[in-house]
Length: 247
Image 1 (cartoon, rainbow, N blue to C red):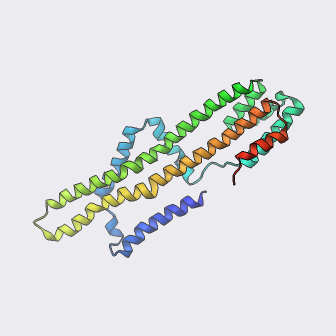
Image 2 (spheres, rainbow, N blue to C red; image 1 turned 45 degrees about the horizontal axis):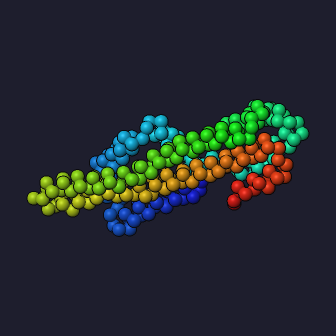
């Protein structure tokens, strides 16, 4: 689990709820069903208009990454690549066939299979770069689903506030209802701005960071496999790939 994400969401909730209590409004002042419907459904509707269904669903699938990101261990991968290199030097590239069949990572398995098939280094680079770029682009589109929500939510909050004020204006003859009506109108603004800045935009940025780290990891893997195809010494491969490790 990503502890920072959990702590961040918790602190955000404490800031909003605690602030409401400290200001004397109470928690009840933060709830308004109409404002919730306007902001949440409106934001969802605008996002669905913008995104393709495949992209939207992918965004929902990678959402858990913000709290439980895929494990990326560059050091362990360098060790595995060096191990593959040693196998290739001792047994030839065909010696990697068993390892390719046992590999759980589809990207690594495809690269190993290209080695076993005797593909040229340049061909390996072209094929794997195409896979890498396509996957990164699709993942980034998924992350931008939440970025879009962060853009639309504040605007829908303003729409909700204006609609609430319109309802207040219809009750000007009854001053006793004005205070509560105005307060309820601005709840929509709180929903829109708070959800955008405490949830949607942070989640989008966290997902983008994870996707970039994942792509860098796969870039390192690709460079290692190409080095094996070129017959480089395992020590040289390890030294070359160490530049991808920054911890």
